[in-house]
Length: 109
Image (cartoon, rainbow, N blue to C red; front, side):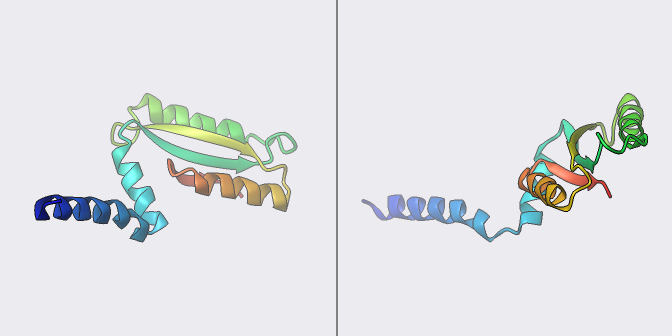
């Protein structure tokens, strides 16, 4: 291989490896900036057992924001999760939200 080929190959490998050194917050920020269509929000609540209007309130806020053009032209998308008001379910829900790099915010208890 020529020196140029080796140099290009090394640069490609280096650039691919750089993502490993970014923090989760940096990767999430980059993903959020590249998604120009939606702002995705996780919502955790015991929807089935605690029907207190929380879901309706969050959905109403989403509808009002989206009907007025969203935030900086980006619509809100909700990810609703019922945590059954249980600690273990809450942990699972939080884990699912944290693993979804598209979710940039969470609402809940």
